[in-house]
Length: 412
Image (cartoon, rainbow, N blue to C red; front, side, top):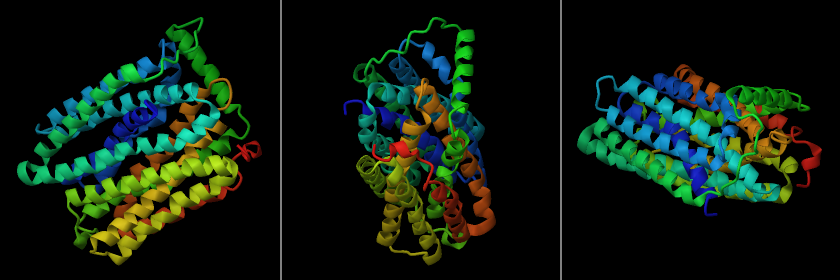
């Protein structure tokens, strides 16, 4: 508990900065929905390709050293991003710097997940999966909650560029502080000593990792399941905040930046954390195989909440908040399923850390694809039909969840 929460907070923070917070910033600065979704979606491909350089990290003396290094790199890039927002060419400069943040974060994820897997037993991994997911998304509470509320307050006094300069500078400083804390807090789990630490040796290892990965029985079906798992979430998480911010004349709810932060960031994230913890213990109690259908159902059915909001267009703050809480609790509850599936099914074997990275890479690919096209789909369909489409797009993974987990995990 002295390092799992902070480790996964540091893992989640850059992810939500790129995937969600940047979208709110660009919305405040007048960038259209389709451009926001497209560019922030393309940035998430850093998490797709991270397995390709995962074996290179094995040459480091420890996973801890890589975790700390890339937290410091990400924090520095965020401070540079903050300083770029006043410049005339801020958009492309900010995209480039967000790309650096994304690459540092994706690489950090490999080392952090490897440290988690190698330092905890299988039973501990199951129990801590809820805490892992919960604190990963505590980063969402910080990034899309209080800091967005503060951004909304500052926007009224110094404009969007000044407000978001302060916000990203604070986030950069926070990442640097976390890097310093983890020098002390993380376990010093050493990487396995290799006979060849050269670049050529790393690529030989990469080849062995890839061959072994794709020889796993049923791997293509497993990868299809992982790819589709976040089809609904990727689209909702991209468009939901834009829907809350858009004017009612454009089909949105017309909330301010601060109101969006209070509802979606604060209340929604607390609901997500609660759902994550419940999902972890639920999976440990029932076993992953029997729990998976309920996890996937719990993750996607609450998306009805946003369909309700787009159809009813309520003005009551409590009603809007309740719908957001329901959607986020369900997402937190169900997200545990894909994490455990990758840890306990996909990563089994000799190269556990690298194979888990491959699994998260395919999950990121699905997320990136659906996120990147979500803006175009929303523009074409409108908000109400878009949220209906999100529900339909979750049906394939719901059906697959009935039989995708191997029977030997039924009682684990």
